[in-house]
Length: 231
Image 1: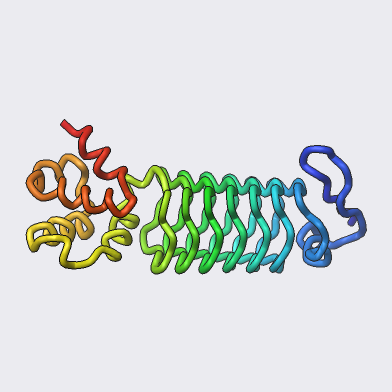
Image 2 (image 1 turned 90 degrees about the vertical axis):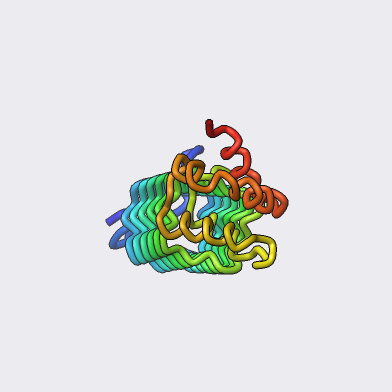
């Protein structure tokens, strides 16, 4: 069948030819300049697009489950609502990418560049984010249960005040000596039982201010700011 890949803004044809599918077309032309390609809703399940240049492309709602995107250039790409479950995005450049509501469950993102990426409402359950750069990423409502954040750069992330996973990871890198035994006990209870803010305030009002002050000094100020708003 004839497949045409057009630019999302200008409508100009990037690729045109006879292919079995959009997936077949992109796999055969993955070395082409695909920046700004309009691939919204495309079925690219399991596609081999390693190293592809998809900067600024429209991949909103695309099906990329299990796709191989290792080292791909996706800076500024629109991936809203895309299904990237189990995809290999190791070392991919996703700086400033819009991943709101995307499904990245179980995805491999080791060493990926996610600086400034919008991950609000994204599903990152069980994702491998070891060594990923999440500096300045927006994480409000992101689901990070079971995600491996070891060695990830979390400096400058925003909207993380309600994330137990981020809290646990930031705590992991604090010297054990900075918290008292009572503070470590409170931290453990919060992480294990996912206590709500009201419960935290009610049970640990005497120790939490110091904990949050230590984290604020480490560059993570949202917990202290939120704590100070609770009546």
